[in-house]
Image (cartoon, rainbow, N blue to C red; front, side, top):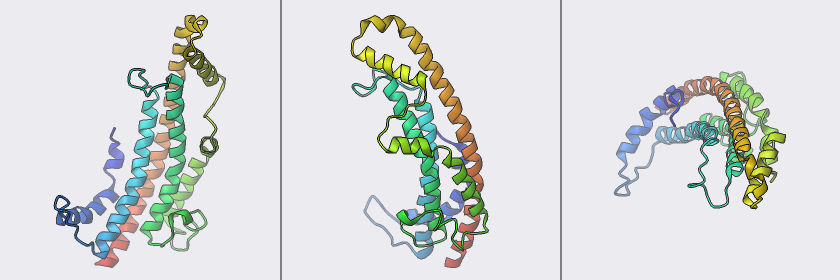
Length: 238
């Protein structure tokens, strides 16, 4: 799946103007790597940091779409439909909160603050004197507020608790577990649980679509501001 809005970002065009010619100088087939000059290295670092953000958002799209992609013939052994749903939802919540962390690391790279990844936090990035008062600071604060809504789900998953949202999902889990155990007396309810599972998935996909639309509306202005700062910073290497 391609997200045209993310693929056509101006920041990628600006960085590629430096990165593409550098890659062309290298011959990977022969194992020839030309040492990057300061501008090329800065651009390569920024390219990786930007792509870490956009790749994460694309992975969120994948997680949402995969909710309805269960096929018993291609699923790993012992994975039933409920397992598949939970896997996709947990993947989604883990990634949606990590977008903010990746944007903090991008800002660290962009401004060349020199912080380690583990030290890229609100207190060191958003409140940094170089970042304060910028459009990037404003966008980061908006993104932080947005992702905070999902941290309770992320923390639950990260601390070894299986995602469980409501009674409907719990009932779906119970049905598929009993079906696997060979409880033949529940087979007559299979069509009912299939219908309920389909409805749950469609509802969850619609919910995720709203999230991703809102996230994109925050990320694109942020990355536009990143482009302006990149052009300013890269001009110092010329």
